[in-house]
Amino acid sequence: MSDVTYEQTLALAGVCQAAYLIQQLARTGRLDADDLAQPLKWVTNTSPQNTLDVFGSEQSVEQGFKIIHDQLGHKSHKKDAELTRYVLSLLSLERKLSGNKLALQRLGKGINDIERQLDHFELTDEQVVANFAGIYSDVVSPLGPKIQIFGNSTLLQQKSVQNKIRAILLAGMRMSVLWRQLGGRRRNIIFRRTKWVGFSAQALSKFSQI
Image 1 (cartoon, rainbow, N blue to C red):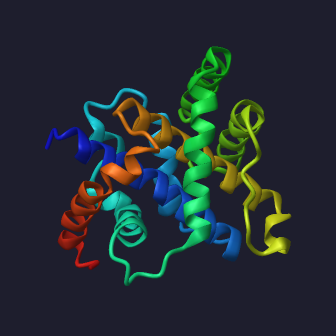
Image 2: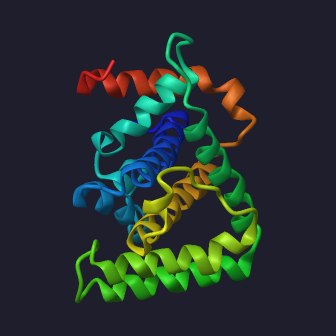
């Protein structure tokens, strides 16, 4: 499917999925290795054949589709203000990143360094995750207001949890950049929400999630 609105939905689902994973980490401190690896793959997949190729499959952003469906769709679903705040914060920070050529160059170099590191380490190795986190902390975070993460304060003080959250924030930024490249704009949330919800519902119907 080549419809640009469908591709925007995919990218936005990626942003939403990143927000969800951050929320889970902040609350529980736990994340399955596969759930951690998936968004990190988005960052290192720098030459995809098409938008879907970034993700591998629709099912890899299943939770993201569900968030779009529930948050922008039917009024009967309880809205999660925290998730919405994370998503909007990522989209806002992306605008700062995209307007800063030096930051984009530093980001590209950091990702290339990680790709070389993957010749010797697994994607979810603690040091690799720490390097993803370092790119976010050093390059992206200083560009705008820090994204405030809510959760278990004891867990949020743990370095390993901090690194995973920042690594996934970087993945969320990657999806935010993709969303904008595909023509996504915050003002479109009002005008295209029906189509985004519709595409999300179609995807979720394949996974029996609605």
